[in-house]
Length: 143
Image 1 (cartoon, rainbow, N blue to C red):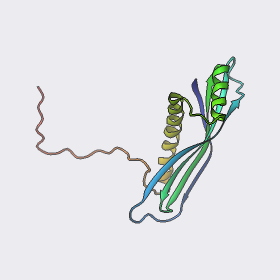
Image 2 (image 1 turned 90 degrees about the vertical axis):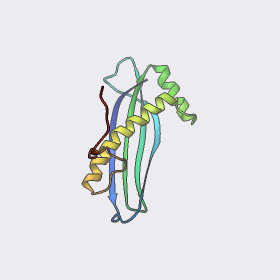
Image 3 (image 1 turned 90 degrees about the horizontal axis):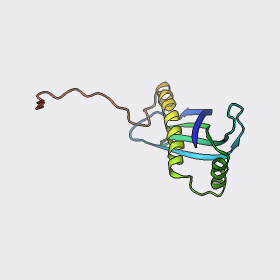
Image 4 (image 1 turned 45 degrees about the vertical axis):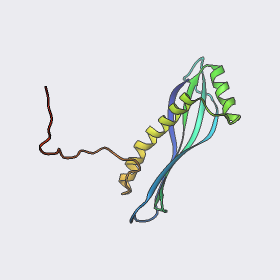
């Protein structure tokens, strides 16, 4: 199966208190529903719609960020029907497919979350890379 779409339907952010001292940031993905979807631009293939909620919580009670949306998966009729059936039985989604779905959600939502955190003057929920000054007198050899 192939991921063919990603859409956010709702974004909520609330800064509750000033950040003082230590805090923790937790995040979680909750898959709300998996169902068949009709998409007019896709011919001879079926589509599954995976609805999700992705939450970022700053503890203790500092801020919350929440995203709702869906990921669209395209495959042949049997793949889509089996995927939806397995989900309804609450069996674990095939690990490779689950990883691709979750990584898509993480990537898209984390980029948007960093932008919102900047706007609301919150520390980023993930560590961003930064440049450190070079150490003097590095003993390096190139040969």
